[in-house]
Length: 260
Image 1 (spheres, helix red, strand yellow):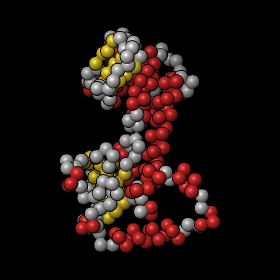
Image 2 (image 1 turned 120 degrees about the vertical axis):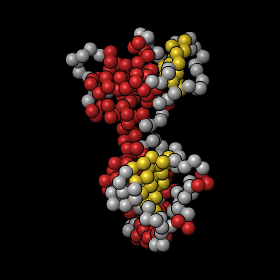
Image 3 (image 1 turned 90 degrees about the vertical axis):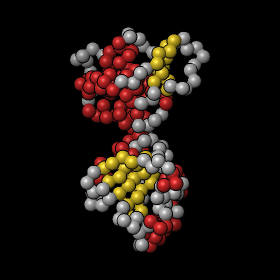
Image 4 (image 1 turned 45 degrees about the vertical axis):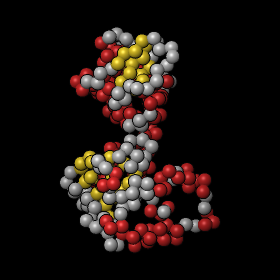
């Protein structure tokens, strides 16, 4: 059994595809570097990530697949799921092995690799939409709006364009507490940021709350008004906890003002 090891980046996976064709090999599995190998693994090839090789593979995909399919490949990788690596690798290899002129495999959901990548990509897109619904902002004294999230998948890059268009007239910072990075918008440009030390964070990672000394004067009042409104519109006779948990999973609650 031939196994490829790589650095678990998208460029690393694309470099693995390049190696497979240049070496005329077909590995049965991709494994992240440092992860345990299967006992019956006979041969291991370590993939060296190359921006140039990855770019050539990606350019080839853009020629052979529709824009929607290419986007789905990129989106699916934001899932960060290790079980995606091998199906995605095989899917891409099949794209290049298919004779030109034939119908693309991107809609062939009877293919297990295409089906796996498609299903995972849809989960990531669903998580993206949920984040747009459940993100709550807090206003700081300097006028910046802070939103803290902790999504299952790395969907923050997929939401930046929406918030830039929707809140283009105000500065904001959206921070992923799980992955320790965020995006700051200064009303002109969006910049990816990280905090080198957790004690330098202007908010609490567990609750997502801004420090009291940084809150806008009226922010606590607005938060209380929002909680009051949320309770007031609730019709107790129509409460359906099971339906509420389905539409608004509990894992989102800790950063939502109305649930605090």
